[in-house]
Amino acid sequence: MRIGIPKENIYEEKRVALAPAGVDSLIRAGHTIYIQSGVGEGSNFSDEDYAQTGAIIVYNSEEVYRRSELIAKVSPLSDEETELLQDNQILFSFLHLAVGNKSTIEKLLKKNITAIGYELIEGQEGLPVLHSMSEIAGQLSIQIAERYLESYTKGGRGILLGGITGVAPAAVVILGAGVVGTTAARAALGRGAQVIVIDNDLSRLRKIDSTFRQKITTVMANPYTISRGVKFADVLIGAVLIKGEKTPHLVTEDMVKKMKKGAVIIDVSIDQGGCIETSHVTNISDPVFYMYDVIHYCVPNMPALVAKTASYGLNNASLGYIQNIADNGLANALLGDPGLSKGVCSYQGYCSNEAIANIFNLEFRKLRVFSTN
Image (cartoon, rainbow, N blue to C red; front, side, top):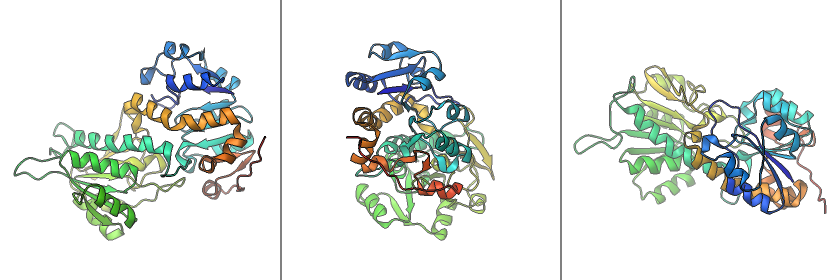
């Protein structure tokens, strides 16, 4: 199979879909890989690193798209990238179509693109490709929060996350006990913070209790407990995920108004619309804004801050799926892996994801695939 890795044209996206090690595996299996020159620079992979694996280096994105049967990328499609897609191609990427434009999904359908969203692929223990990015985002959320609590940050509270003897630590309140929330809780606890995790899934809260030996306070989510937790927080981490759907606003504007002056919000859910009503998308160069004297950090591609780690993580999690399709063909790969098929949003000109079809009032058809053997 001919596989293309184009440069990301989303602002400040430094991750790459496959590391040289992953490209090497695919080439050894007999596949042809087209790499756009400079694709790995943000992750400290050179063109020579890829060329040594046997990849073909090309010098514009149009050629990558034109020559490839499968496109592997990272960020959701821009309008320009959607236009570059060729009829009947396979696309692997984070898609986040639920918070995108209707025109994007319509163009995917018109071009008969098989669009597979990394964030929707299911495994035995959740969402395996998204998991790696969520682990990174959870850790980064605490690093970032520490920075914005400092006195030298405009409006910062001037407090140490872990406190000292005789001085209380910061209160870190985490909405959501999934991968992001659990990883953030581990990082915050390790730094000595007072950590509270709020979720509406009792089994997840029990797992938090067990994992951290009751050193973290767990709270069942409802409007009352969320309101109290938000008011108490020095740091509020939004880590809510509803698979494939826009995230609901669990924290209202009125709740934000009542937060401590200089409190920090890290809305990790912003790539799916955000779970805090006052959030809006920011970027790595200009990551925060202030509302009601509360610092909001709402960068949708946080893992790009550690692009090399993130690219290796994405490579490790996605390579098996890409290799399965390349070795066995799309239809056989989807038939053999129901979890992979859950990631398919568009197939043969129709929308195969019911949530997205409902959001944009499109015809929904269940995925029907027939073996090519």
